[in-house]
Length: 252
Image (cartoon, rainbow, N blue to C red; front, side):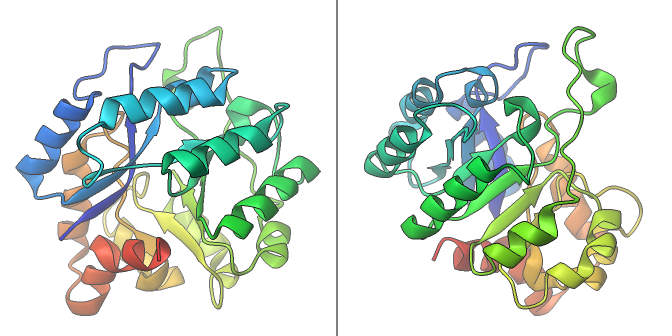
């Protein structure tokens, strides 16, 4: 069993993406033995209206909710996010995705704290995206810097029990912040964990119980995430934890 914690559906505005609809992603998953994928809407990164983006995601995955599990995009810097969160709860979403760099706030923003408190009350997890696309590939009129994580220790200290997934970070990040993970519900996905023994080094730094299988498909190749696990040489409980155990526990 494999659960992919980081997939996205919808058209990317700057280049053509293959497999960006439900049928395409499911085809990839079937070919690689992926049981389930957590998905968000590309439009949630760019729209001002998060509710419209989340609604489009539900339309895309209709009939496949057992395998494509929806996460809502919410922007705490935009008025009305409370209503967006409430509508997402009523519609059957299971978690929240945050894009601080695209939505123009940082981890020290008090509005983020308000949102995290509201999400905690729902017993939902949160995914914070460090970056969506490598900055070298950005459109020259839309250069979006990665999220700064200097304020992450304060966020974790304030919400130690809130499940938080940092998406798009490296094994070097895991080493830098390794002291944050013990005794918390903080996780990293492997989508940007590159280099020989990258996943193994991440596991050594923070423990297998804090690592999630995540491909960032279709922006990244789903096959690459599978190969990272194979290359890491993990066995037994560590491998099972990363492939599905941690994800199952995270969603309760």
